[in-house]
Image (cartoon, rainbow, N blue to C red; front, side):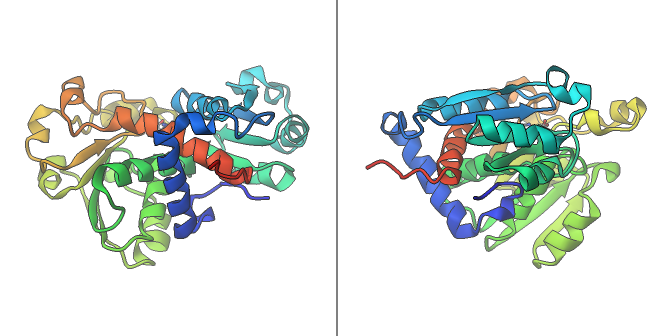
Length: 307
Ligand code: NCD
């Protein structure tokens, strides 16, 4: 039995297969309508979510399966003090696969150790968010036709943004990837990403604080929200929250074929006027999230691709 806790749990070849499957799903949706008949997905969300939880649910429903779960810790027995280990033992009796989001880093890993069904990490604290990464990779591949030889700018809260950590870990395995890490000093990527991921893999990157200067060289700009819920005090959040606002003026500095991604939710960091720009890809990205998660559910449940 396999879990998805970290983007590196799949090899590059497995990711390619999964993205190919997601591509086939996108173009032949009705063919997949019954491949998970009778299967159940549990969504265990101890932290707020719109896209991730609902796209998981939509994914399972599109495959013919059903869904059960909870959308906040308050409405689960966690509020009574139940441990993740006990909860997952019980969920294993009710469902065939589960997606867990938790504010504590490593909670889905703990769950996997007590689970008899595949556990998918749907975001653990400021750590990792591997299914967003599958979505991001599918989006980049669809838009640019490749996952190598790209200059990728990541902008905003690179310290607490789990989508950023997972995307960097996944992309360093492709050749010719360069990163421009754009953040205020206080929100730079954590040290382990620099030493254990970027330096260890001899990946070219630079850390800058000016978005305008970075714009012209980017093939992809991955914007992120400042992660309010991970700050220790509100003053720092208020000071840093509007560090970057992508607007029409800034978009003029970018290449014609540079695309803007954002895992969403957006707060202020992308002005709504950018939505009309054909290079704004964040809403398409959310749609790709459903196909990526359908492919993931099929892969972990070892469901055959229909002919
Ligand atoms: C992200 C998350 O939860 O980390 N959202 C998502 O899953 N699409 C990004 C965020 O909350 O800023």
